[in-house]
Amino acid sequence: MQSVDIALVGAGPAAYAALTAMRGFSGSVAVVTGATSKPSQGGPVKIVSVAYERQQPACLADRTEVSGDAPPMFAAAEVGGLANYWGKQLQVYDCDDPWGRGQFLETWWDYCAACEAVQRDLKVVGGARHELLENGLEKSVPRLLTGTSETPNAGLRTMARAVEARLKEMPNVSVRAGRVSRILSGQGMVRLDLDDGTQLRARHVFLASGVLGTANLLARSLPQASQIGFRDHAPYIMNCLWLSRALGSPRAYAEAGHFNALTLKHKVGGRCDLFASVYAVSQAPISLITATFGLGPHLRGRRIGRLVDFVQPIRIWTPTTMVQLRHLPREGRIKANKVPDAGQDVGLRNLLDWLASHGVRHTLGVTAPGQGFHYHKLTVGDRDEPVDQVVESAFDGRVRVIDASCLQEIGCPPHTLTAMAQAYGRVSQDLAMVDLMKEAM
Image (cartoon, rainbow, N blue to C red; front, side, top):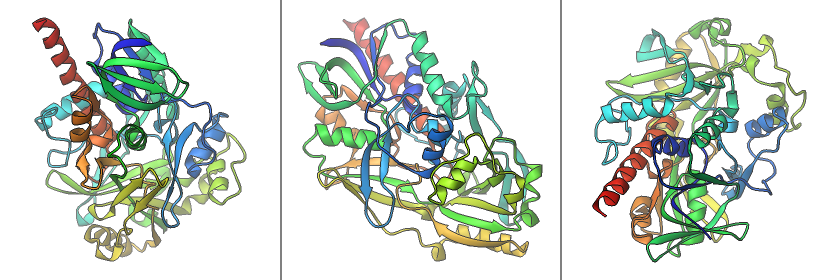
């Protein structure tokens, strides 16, 4: 059985942040990537389209049914995680947004420094504000992760490339292409049982397998994890006609190959209380449209063309779009509370009134619960104990959750960069403690 100083479970954005914090660490490290030889079939249409375009299977695992008419939920099962399919907006939260204040990031400046550290070797474009609009709205270029310093145009493979580059830098690292089935504690070490029947022992474990991956792993490892809570945004989705009357022609702001074309924000002081992504359908692959209409992905490598930009989708996040979900592992399903009430959402009404004043027509709907990919605030048991508290007690402080599971609150903008900054802060502090313990010995 292999024994190491640190085991890192997962290989997505939080794991990349952890590996960044481990630069210069002299101990032994094992990374369990989460890859699976038996990926789930299907998945969200965007993932189906991306897998088709790159001519590789969609590497998803832990398919779990969701109550009601919502589609099932998945965990990523490959290097790079869901970033390989969904793309990532790396938004830096403002000073009054919930950026993860706590013992690992005590001030907003600490948070900004952590954000800079984890994105230093990534290529991020956009973010510049175009102009202030009426009703307190502002229009800006999306802040998108498009590549790394070595592979600037990696696109949806960026996070995989970034993780692989970090692993090459580390002199004492082993990589396991598998999934952890269970974690056990004992005799000053933590034992990880892998799904291929092998085992791994580590002095310290960092869980970075994503909220769903972490939830399922804890359910297999802890008897009290009979139910697990977490949160997500269920954003509004709006299809607009004549949006150019308010925002100008998509030709002026849509970049070739970027489906995500424009960002709208409404801020109160240093806090964002509405975040909206405007999409340019012309830049979407045809396979995404055919998959959306239930025809399956077709016409690889072809994009739709500008003719269809007369209808533009907008996805909108506000405090009202937050939903609570409860995972029941023994029943193999996830329950969601009621969907957001658009009629009671002041921020949404403000945006709709502004669009209407410019003659924009729209249809409004809500994304199915659990499909927003803003998972956070993992709790365990019927008392909803915070995951940090449960893991600290169960594994004598030797296991640390570092993905978005540990974020108690998120704002309206995408929280990927904030989760990465939190992971960086947690791992940096824990490594400093390890070094202090070595010096004391």
